[in-house]
Length: 377
Picture (cartoon, rainbow, N blue to C red):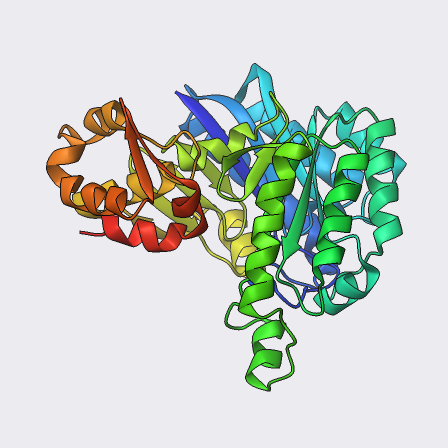
């Protein structure tokens, strides 16, 4: 079995105002104990899944690079000892500008990391300040250039639009800078104000100055218009890559392939079963250290839920949904279940049926969540 491996490092220097991911500040005193527990969980799961071949590893967070190079090396050593890695394994790590100096980058390269993803979000200093980011635009540029000098060719930048006080000009400048830096991959997300975040608090007080709907729509269209001109092909709703640089790990999520999540708050999908680890860092450490699984959720989705998940995950990609793969997974004909929904979406101009594939049009990509709701039985 080919397996993707996700490793969660739930620590940050500061919680950004828009972030609702499981990440924590002020826990520096737990870094070493957390890594020790994580390495133990890696070893335990490697023994259980001894027949698996890991062909993608993604170390995410949080901000993994708030850990020392020594601790991150210990994580990578544990992975190599516990699992068989394919010769061409994609090994990604997330970093924020300012948390990875040249020494750290060299250590990551020596550990086998071959792909980096920087959470840049914008190359405008006022916009970065409004987001609560701890880096400047200049530090973001420096981080990318340092990574390239350290030998990282496969680089992703996360960018955002629809941000407080962001102008269309700001967005164009950020896209142009990403092009000048010659990175291989861009993930571009529209802001969603999630409950429990700093932005949600400001919005509830009427103090969050977001672009209006017209400007937000113009920003979306600017991204879609700019990407092909800059040499990036869209392969998923929010992801764009130069030829040969799609993120293989993330494709596993969208293509209904198995992945194992390790660390606090990590999620797994294996043999049709979804599993989640406890989010609280100290509880995670205590559980693993005492020999207890840190799992708090094991879910076997019912057939209708599993079919719907398959559909809206696959439809996120430009390639779309494979009718034959659906048949293989669920032993039934796709159109016998979803013909009515597909016909309605085709009439709306949101979906195209082409041979074995059902895929979203540009309109369908723009209003993806509305399209996906059609597949909920």
